[in-house]
Image (cartoon, rainbow, N blue to C red):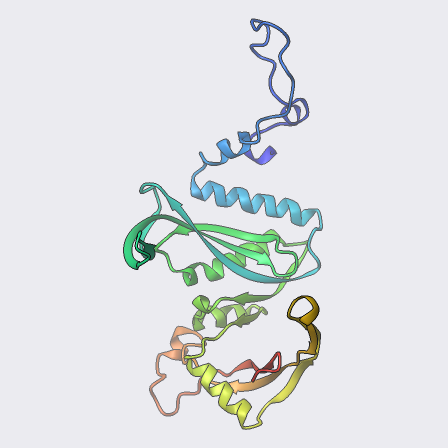
Length: 278
């Protein structure tokens, strides 16, 4: 409340009694309208809004709501606006509409707005850093700045130990830079990527070492016909993969077409079995 201009007296006493004398009867005392805070926030510039969010996160970190070591996870949310806004962007989205006859049609439309990028604690889902960027800006351009902001917000109270990214954040130069800073980065690979095909081939050939296996008991079905079964999950660690010739500095990846090029190697965790399915 203090960060957006409210003082302790307003918080304690609620609404201001100004104008109560001319009114007939006593004015009902009560707390502030729930929309009072929102009405103030919507008037902020996106840069000021992001700064306010980070100040709140610093106050929470000072209160020791996070553990000493934190695993971060990046989330992106679209914020659509009804009209072009200052500093916003435009993207084309495809939407499906169903007519009165039940036929589905796909149309393309332009959407105005922003993207809210938040680095959250994977364990508690509490935010660690926030940035607001135009909707057309690619998420990967804000990856390092978002992680740096999170480390600044938690400085002296907690430490970001590792960060988990979506596949949209697969960018070798930035991942290499974060690795040089001592951060363990994890990115989910798509089935069509070369790193996935290479890792699956090595796992099928028996290379690597099983690094984890769990066999929990799960309940399947409903009612009297329900049954329990043991759901096995096994993962294997595969070191020495060379999927991305840009996993390093731009100068390192420039001669990737040469035969004597030595790419940096990464480690993958392949899922051999997931709930009894290969």
